[in-house]
Length: 227
Image (cartoon, rainbow, N blue to C red):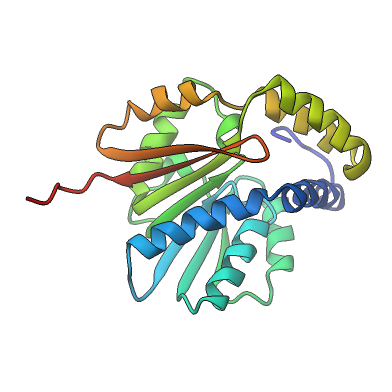
């Protein structure tokens, strides 16, 4: 997927496969629950949330639905480096006035470019190299006023076996079948995430394992201890 060069229609088929997997295995629910927790801990009249590597915008639409149900005033921004993905996202989000999409590189953004309370990243960080990750996470911490939610894969041989069985039935496109396996093998062990978190001592980190073979990492600015 990192070097995908097919048509917009082919890309949509791949996203449909990815979304089907996330829906069946509860991947989107993990992010929504983490975002809801940050909102509960930080009451405001309104929130701005940014999705880095938003793809076709499925996660933002799910968050928009949650916020509508719970009467939460929110502005949602999706950024991605793939214009075809963004066009798919815009077409699918015509009934969501609270969402907008922009072609942006998160590493080049400043706080004044896109104002953000909560930043999310779903199945995105494993695409970055070990050398790039500290810079990217520092940027995430700098851009998000309230906190950051990262939802990514647990690198596990069991996950590989289960995915090979799962894709036979639920994944149609060859690219999605291959990319899913590559993504699992590019995922993280918990100790690796903990080591990365140590590079951001100004933040409070909570890393938890979730089914199906995911880690959710919530990062918030450290608050002064009350006396």
